[in-house]
Image (tube, rainbow, N blue to C red):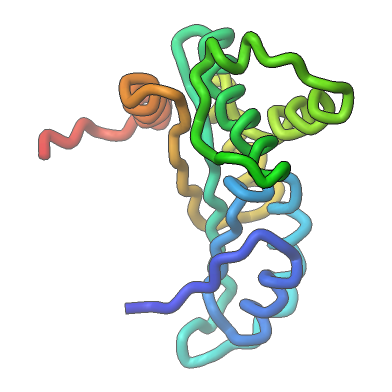
Length: 173
């Protein structure tokens, strides 16, 4: 068993480095700062009994679909839920239809658009290109994904598309 530090800021990355722990960056909470957090972690890791060399992963929330517009609709449900959470409202994912009828003020629109700028969504090729770029830029040892969407079918299809794009074998169990 190993202990990891999960965090979403440069501070948590520095703490993991100081403690000599593997670090998991929660890009699903803060998709903007993965690269800026992992670079100093790698430079400043204090080797420990738990870890001789830096080891990091980045976790993402993603939405993949055969159709880029549908992926955007599904990702929009998460962006809207994050907006509501920032307003101390319910974090439950709204339906894409509910999001489509919501009237955003200027600040809300900016927040949702900013969130969507950093969340990997689109076709499987678009999503994996985004993931691969962050991996290269951050030098993450592992990537972890959680598919988002309003329906179970959308989440399962997203995961299946990304697995296929990476050439992962089917798991019959």
